[in-house]
Length: 448
Image (cartoon, rainbow, N blue to C red):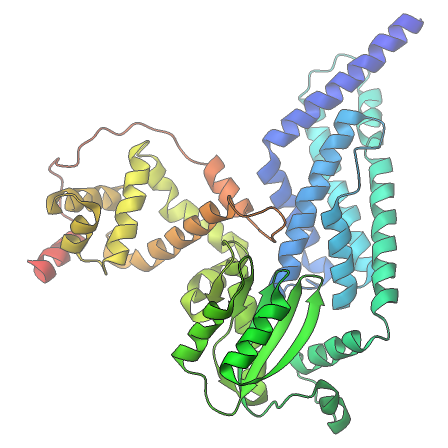
């Protein structure tokens, strides 16, 4: 009997590892589903307006999913150390005023959905023993993980509340959040912030370890006052204010003063209290893009379309699937199509300039564009705006792959897009005769 029991236990361990392997192959799908579940309206969509909080939530989901997979493989409930990303997100939630109940319910809901995925793969495992024992075993690996995770989250959350409560920094942050939400502060409360809200403002969100150095440099270069709130451990909300409207040259000084490794998202120059709020909202929108790029200065007006789309992830996925995935059916020519379109838009849709940029003949570019139009089933002149934004999103996904993992990166829409690429063959036919759609007719009439 002991030998049979031993073999059965070993079989359960093996099947747990196999299920984990199957789940890892579905990682983008699972992470996306869990994120959608815990960001559902039943949780109040708390933090949706804050790019850093949403990105941190995504990062915590990725870490928690991996934590769950490791539990299946190790079986004893240890699964290594508690994900630091989850701990940091709990601290951020405490700083933002997200209730502990909401934080915990999100993890419990996410774990419940993960359990459904685990059972789905268990059914496919082909296990020949007692299915009830298998289900009990697999779900049993998750219970101690959830207990350890929630205990660490409670500890981090309460520690952050205790650490920040009553401090002058916490008080300033609360006043700023109240003012951003539209609350009117009295004279004494405004005096605590020591900032003139009736001037011109440039809002910024600064992420990195050398934020103080950057803020000092900009303040000296522009001769302005400054309101700074520590939003998170390595993130500051900043407003640079002065009486004279900032110029383009002034905005360029932000790049000149930026230390290496610092990410800065910047709003537009705005005036008075409503402008103070608006420039911060613009900086938050720019942060959605900045956190997907290598460190640098990201101005909202330069990335407004990408930021608007990224605020609703399904729209980003829709653009990619509609306008770029069909081009991947070209097989190895798919990248050529993407490169041609990028050059085409950089050349302001001028075919001759595009050919010059690519170092090819004009009729080669025309042929490629015809192929792209036929692949998309529509002329370029009616979908060029969507294509250009889709290409920018694609570039953000490519950039994100090389950015350090500690950054708040949300790349699931990009992972999903890569997973859905259709690998097909497409013969080299750049010079092949094809029907000329309306876009190329317009090219000829404009460029001769």
